[in-house]
Image (cartoon, rainbow, N blue to C red; front, side, top):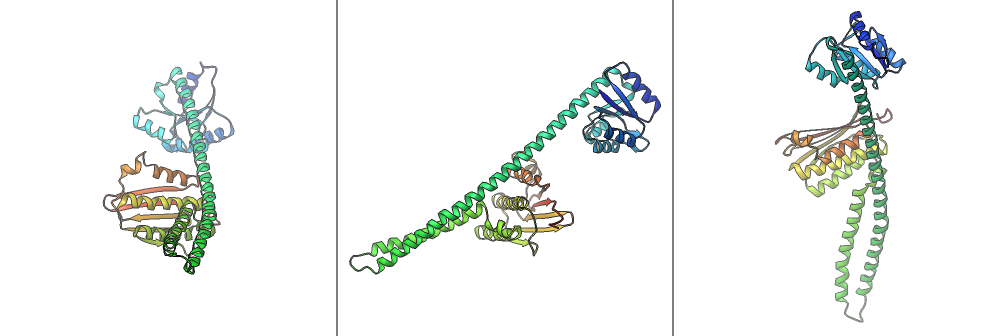
Length: 354
């Protein structure tokens, strides 16, 4: 087991060496400054680092943060002269796996602490890797879902739409022929065809609406800004809500996945406003700044509560966050009772988009 001791106090270094001398399985190296410790960690493999929090070039929890940033896979055991539970907790938050008081170190305690730190670091790495795989799987599921929606929307639009249009033409032809027929009483037949045409028109409208809901062609053909304008206009007609738009004059150059993610988040957000907010006015804005793209949806409804935002059962919010995280995006939801809710989306964009 290879351990690096980062300690500038000669007496403390001798103490640790004396404690570990009885364990032949341990190989110990030392560094006197944080900079030297980081250079040694990046050059050689170590299972754990025993880290003093008072070094010539770094002090306090910043020491842990800097080491973890430079060598994220190395387990860290903090060594300090202070027996402070609050400091131990802060060290753990900064990335340390364990915390030892120098005056109480013996071989068994140090060996257990190091092995615990290594095991915990390994478990954290496996958990992080599992999360990354899960996010990659979620992203692939979302991608496959959008691909399937596109295929279904195209099939509905092309097959059902064309068939209904042909049927309407046939019924219109039949109605024309019946109106010129004098050999029999065709009034009931004319009445039937007159009732059929509005039904067919309604079906054609439903097919177009379902196809657009599955995958709006305007998103693929004209881009995100035009898709938002189109969707909000449809939303206004369906809900009679006052929606104010503030969008860039030109479309933003996003890849298909980013544009789809933002469009779906806007859909979900506006749907939530209708279902839960009891709002009468909504403001939607989109703009690109030097540090990324920003989309904001603000309503004047009842306001979402903090416990609702944190609720693990809020699957809609969880789904939006996961969808955005695939592209490095973030979702912030803030509400005040009776003052409405603000949903803010941030997403990094490429230099091309900027």
